[in-house]
Image (cartoon, rainbow over all chains, first blue to last red; front, side):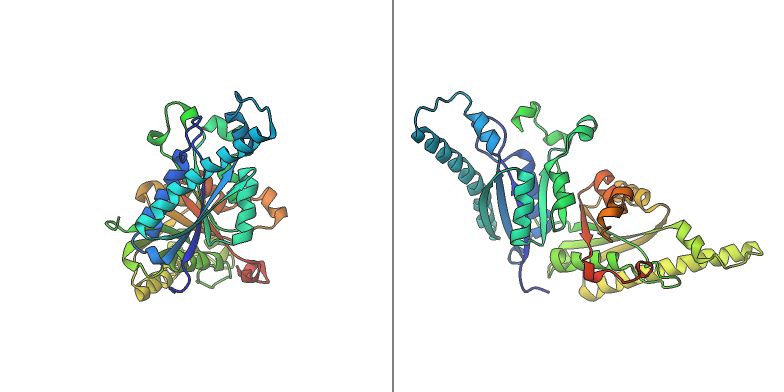
Length: 175
Length: 175
């Protein structure tokens, strides 16, 4: 029963705090939950596949006040975004190494729902862990979440880790 | 990180083959998936909470041809149903003991969706595993499944284990 490690894909994203290239509360919680409740001390039994789906619109929003005067400015912006994504992955990969659990991490640009489902088809994890901000009852009716989409469409079992109320930031923009 | 075991609730049910008191293919698959992909060799790190939500209507259907002439007949029927439920749980508990993973198993009568969500609130597992027959695209629109209901309403993370096409019986009644 202990041949290949169980391959767990964890979808991670950035906090939406402007200019704050850190993991979102919900993806950090999903990652930590996976280590605490699933991997536990059995570090050789699991491999984490850390996928950062980088939203392109959000990157544009970050750069609303920027002035683009030359092709070089765009290249610099792309490099800045790449650096942010790498910084995010570094956080998770470092934690995995500290604990001694194998991992792979990569970035894909695009709509998170499409990116995640596409990458599930490509790398075939045993299951997928997605954090969720846990929308309120009013939002639930009108807004589909990334996690709900994944449950329906990802071609592998999916587990959604919702935040508790205490874990939500006071200002939703700090998420 | 290795104090209390991770408490995994697995919802199990009977095969719908008439008079065949065995686990359904989908709940057997969910159980085996949990052992193979989550518990692995770390048997002391997990405790399985095996909940059998026994549908009352189905029991009635099994006894369509029976004649009830005295209160005793009903008592006998209830005892027969109880025996079937116990037989089902015995299957799972035996497997857990063979592997050496701790478990608790119990039966609750009622609508599986309500029973499962109620028991999640009561025993507070770390997560819930539910098997799914994986309805076709046509059925999906009109029929909600127990597993979908649990994802939305159970107060803990939920992972749905779908069967593959090969695991589905040719006759849906043999499920």
